[in-house]
Image (cartoon, rainbow, N blue to C red; front, side, top):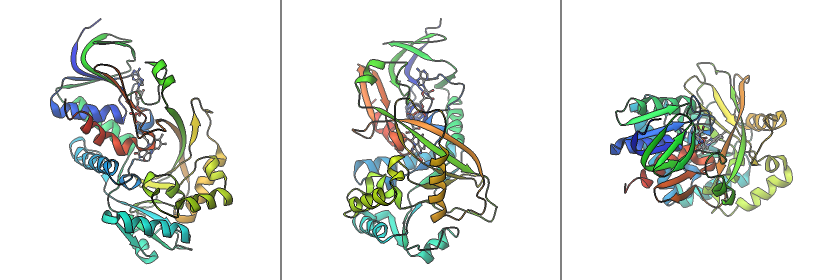
Length: 373
Ligand SMILES: Cc1cc2nc3c(=O)[nH]c(=O)nc-3n(C[C@H](O)[C@H](O)[C@H](O)COP(=O)(O)OP(=O)(O)OC[C@H]3O[C@@H](n4cnc5c(N)ncnc54)[C@H](O)[C@@H]3O)c2cc1C
């Protein structure tokens, strides 16, 4: 039994835990990150790797996403992971989709451009030109390879003199200032619980009373595309307009949602919208669906993957359509806000519930959260 003392102990080595550890490192705080798995295997390594300010409403959330974006790029140089400042294009194949993009650009378009089909094909030669009306290019999105980036950030932090990361050690009890794990007891000035969607190990009674819910998302990855292929900006189709809060101020959105729910109710039923990102191996990461609950079917539904791939074919013509991997991820979501922050007691805080925007928000949030420490 050790009784080592730290300024900060962080439970969980997903993106939320690591983002706070990075801020702690910048502040010179002696910090211990404790992760129950032998490596991060949660939502933070299962996602698209999309750092996605365009999805956030203007104001402090967009600014937080932009701050995160800046940190992702800055950290890629220190931690040596692939980060492409590719931007994104929302593609419109129907008039109502185009009207929403046009309205968004008119209201909030300081970082966006409306593109004609010809201009889109210059950026992204493999976009399906059939019935393409136009697109909204945004310069601000950054594409990382989630698994590689998270593991590189952890390795970088482990090399810093003030940061320790212990893998394969589960935190079982926190009785401030003591943190008990499967292996030892530590003492901390502050404790952050960044345990993602694990609601049952620590403070289950708090989670039971919280609004938090979980979502299961199905994902796919193509085999490597030929070297002549480049995705260009990350891409999404019209269904994504229903998914992100940024488009909620657009007057045509409700009617568009109504049309989709009448014409193709399976997209609502399975929470499907379709996006495509890339990685440094020229594989295309494709998703996703959203099922909500607390425990999920351990198997993926082929029908959901088929819906996703059919819709993708409508806007992206991949030279190599072979799928190499399918998987699912689960994240914690706070339906009443953009995150869940709960002070268990003075100096012990739960930080989770970023939903589908944890990669986009974590670094900006952590910087704000730890500013006054
Ligand atoms: C399929 C999918 C696609 C997504 N796409 C995007 C995207 O493109 N852009 C974006 O911004 N967001 C995206 N997200 C959301 C984002 O991935 C999550 O919001 C984010 O990863 C949550 O990070 P986290 O650190 O809270 O959770 P996790 O990554 O799950 O990490 C929590 C960690 O805590 C550990 N832990 C829990 N309890 C304990 C304990 N008691 N002791 C020790 N360790 C413990 C767990 O083992 C885990 O490693 C996506 C999510 C999914 C699932």
